[in-house]
Length: 126
Image 1 (cartoon, rainbow, N blue to C red):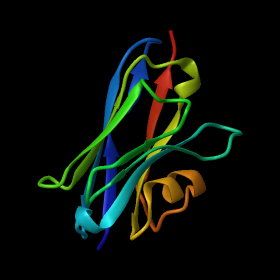
Image 2 (cartoon, rainbow, N blue to C red):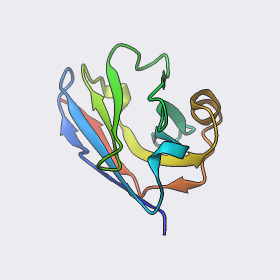
Image 3 (cartoon, one colour):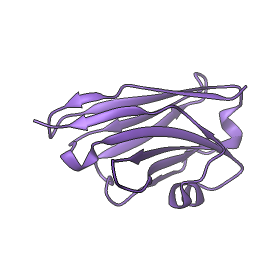
Image 4 (cartoon, rainbow, N blue to C red):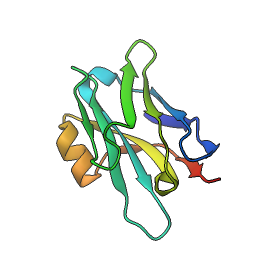
């Protein structure tokens, strides 16, 4: 059974940092693309960052380039999203998702994936 479980969300002040984790089970990362997505109230879901489980190539939305970093640990079946220099507009529910045999660009731009986690709230506020 495929499962994705996010953790690491919370309340942080502007300029602060958080690291989100996505623990996966039921499949092998090597054949999947894993992505982080976010959705704020009243807004459409946005692809934040995606990573290839096979070669580690990455994609970032323009809004987070230079501030966020995605990484994976295939031995732990876990994908991370390091978020630095957080801004109030980063406030959203963050989801991780997995899709078999796709590309990092397709997944992040279309925001389509076969498997989703339950989400974790990130609030950036003073």
